[in-house]
Length: 357
Image (cartoon, rainbow, N blue to C red; front, side, top):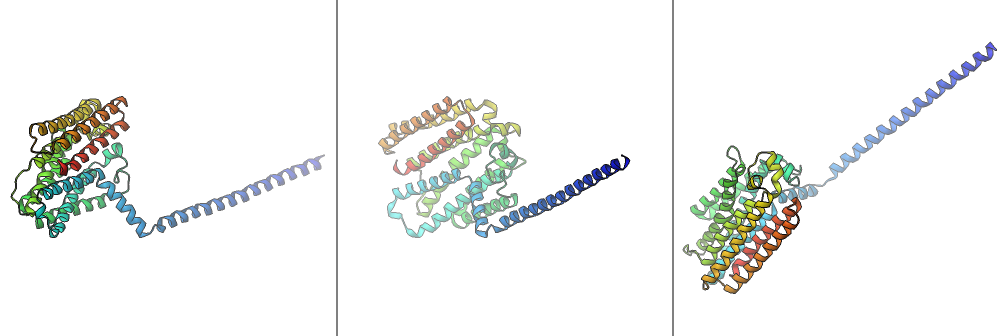
């Protein structure tokens, strides 16, 4: 009996040892497989990263810069410049010369550079706010590094100012550099005037309204060797767009209320609320359309009256419909973003109309 018990104990111990050995072998195999798998994944990731061709990297950079310059503002600058130049040429067709075309392109390039600098410097100093309000912007999204953003802004500011100084005389150069200065103090500490509602909208209205329209009109007439004289349509568009830019300045912060409150940025929206500011923006634009129609009624020889009255009545109706749509949606963030896009569409429409009034 004693021998039998001893033998059974030995067998049990042998089975336990064998089981432990098998577990150790399985663990070694599993670890080896896991290590190989991890190494494999690392090699695949590295290969995938290094596999991006220089062309792919360049395309990604161009895409990030295109987002960085805010395409909706670029379209406004392109349309405004083209419409103003076209209006002057339509009024003076006998002075059109192909030799002036390169200079016109240089002027457009300088304006796009100024546009790029102003919206770019704003994003550089708004990275943390944009992570809340506009996480899709390239710096906030990690698609564009700060050094690259700084390099782009410096290049556009210096390049634009150089083009203007070499081609458009002291007055336009002064106006251009003043615009860059306003764009800088809007975004850059210690002034950073975007923190205060009134100076912020005054800067936007001045740059987008008066400086752009007066500067392009003056430079175009100077290139054609014409003395500066306001024409009624251009004087109208300068006043109209300055008021319109004020409405844009008021409504642009509607969707940014959360981030602006979090970072202590004072806007009309943070002070008065989304609903009230939406009504103020629409009210300003509606007054603008009433002004356009009334001006044409009382000065029939200044404009193409039928186009002036009919189109502005249609645009006013469109504005009312979009404001009602925003109201019915309950002023949600997505509805506010759509409304703001509609405001920019109305802005583009006015410049498309200019050559025909």
